[in-house]
Amino acid sequence: MTATMQTGAAEAKATTKAYPGRAAVISWIFFDWAAQPYFTLITTFVFAPYFASFVAPDAASGQALWGFATAAAGLAIALLSPVLGAIADASGRRKPWIAVFGALLVIGSSAMWIGTPGNPDIIPMLLLAYAIASVGVEFATVFNNAMMPTLVPPDRIGRLSGTGWATGYVGGILSLVLVLGFLAANAETGKTLFGFTPLFGLDPVTHEGDRITGPLTGLWFIIFVTPMFLFTPDYPAKRPMREALGEGLRELRESLLSLPKQTSLAWFLLANMIYTDGLVSLFAFGGIYAAGTFGWDTIRIGTFGIILAVAGTFGGWIGGKLDDAFGPKRVITGSLVILLFAIVVILTVNKDSILFIPVAPPVPGGPLFAGAAERAYIVLGCLIGATGAPLQAASRSLLIRLAPKDRIAQYFGLFALTGKVTSFIGPLMIGAITAATASQKAGMAVLVVFFVVGLTLLARVRE
Image 1 (cartoon, rainbow, N blue to C red):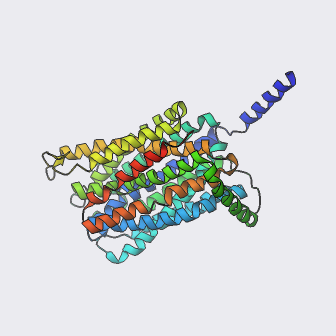
Image 2: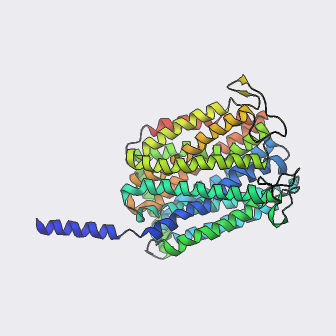
Image 3: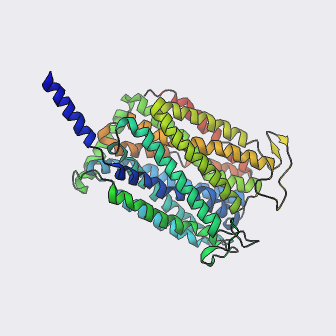
């Protein structure tokens, strides 16, 4: 009995020692900080609305074109992510993949500087750069997520995931403050949100302050992802790449064939496929929708983004604690219910009405968000920001609880697959319906279906 207890104590001690120190964990968390400006500056609050308002012929066609480019990138990610995840599991390494796809993010986002206003000839190249950057950031995230189980014990995964998302939102806030306060200026006044002349002589008339978000995103990623490469340990190498290719594809086939037997995991991946499509589409088009509905400029949309990011920071941090306390499924369910409520109400908000009740419209040239409908949109946006972060953090936490531990990158690849295999459908449907009806509201209404179906499928999952 004593020998058994000693053996158990030795094993527990060895297990404890297997986890790296605080510096490694903090450095890993900073990946979210490094990557978040791409989603904050490019896809949501600055560049996407700028593209729809000033590069594309009009807001509706801009939303449609952006949707088609997002769909194309999503399809590429969906097809390749499980294969690459399986190969990474077989080879053992994660960092080389993060480096390669991080380089695509840097190259694609930096190239978006070419998007000058009123130049339709540049649109194809601009959308190609956006698609390349999207592929890079999503694949880099797949392999970064796969490092989580080696960093903390299982009972702290939820907190780690939530802290990562919250930290990412803080990075997004600071990047937005930098752009709005010092780089992007109002074309009429020539001044930034803080009343400064743009740094580096950026020209407000040609929207250089909006376009600089591309190169800034690339530089930001390089600086803040570096600690992860320096201080966070990687998985040890298992076998050469050529052997890993064959082994990874074989294991992927086995995993796909075994999914029907893993019913909770299968239902979760299916639910994730649906509700993630709705969430990604909501974030991708939220700024564009606001620009078309209220006529907001970059400063207003960016300020709106800062407010949402603050809400997301607290939501991600609190969601991580709720995840460890009550389980990720409950966090996901609660987040989906709130998101569904917010999007339904948003569809009833117009410049001069809320819930179809007339209100005074904002006064041209008045203070920020002076209109009642604008303030209602901000409140609803805060609900989306505060629940979007825990939804995504709890989703990757739930996958870690359900997936086989020796194939974690492969299942994060499948996780990305289910998050992307239909991700082109949401933007495609928004783009197609918007183009057919010339109505942004009609295009956004499709998101209600995604959240309802995702919530229904999630009910079948058992932790």
